[in-house]
Length: 360
Image (cartoon, rainbow, N blue to C red; front, top):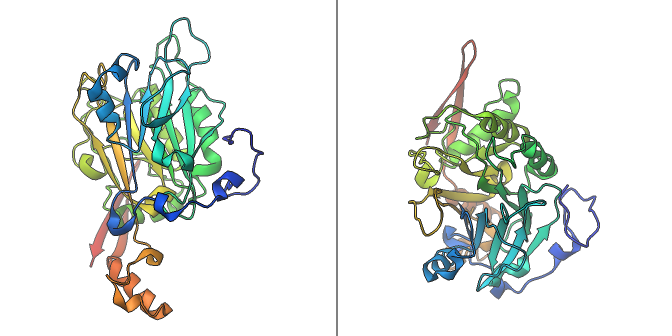
């Protein structure tokens, strides 16, 4: 279970600890109007952070993001990044400095963030206050590093550990969940969404993917067969109802770009239904740079909130000035695409093929 340090375990399903109920001045909130990103997050396996942090260009890279997640930092707890508040977790047992996960948040938003305690050494979690992006629920963000199969630190149970920490939050369909990391998992294009045994849960998700312009199936330039970790990741996604953004969203939608050694996809961004319900998202795999990593591309996700009727500007929508519910309903309908989704299901022996037709 994930809990905030020095705070009681909450029995409230929304997990609203007292610290998350504090009021923040509106001047400290991000501008979420006009679908501008309220939060940008990046991830890269740096394979050693100390030397890289001495280069100005590396610090310029970090400054591109509100929150940056780093794996294999190989640092102790004395890590500092100028202009950022650092949350760090190192490997529990090691001979030389190895492993390590870091999340760094821009100082201007750090007061909205609390690090959560977790029992797994493979993931680091923070809770982002809902007021930062003016949401109804806090955001759960995790950074992950799972050592490769066959290494001395390999643990096939790592995925189960992360899954058990996620379950209370990922499946409530309210708390937005984002998990970015190097999973060392090769999944090719195997679909993690399709539940042949549970179509009632699959179909609502397929509908929201359609409206968000996110593909139901993934593409990938990784020509490797799924490995054991890949199957574990796919199983974890099905259990926690997370979806993989790689190869189906944003600038990577029709690419499925490789993230390691120009040959495999092992670095992923995963989100749940709560995230899809609150944000437009852009996912990107960036060009490889030796400045950032030995073999890994860095990945990023930007979150733009869905239009909120309570934040519409009267100057842009003068019909809101009377505050009447009917006027608000009219404008809300104008702001949403008119989409009607029909669904066909074609059954084959070992496959259910979903087809949609969008009628505007």
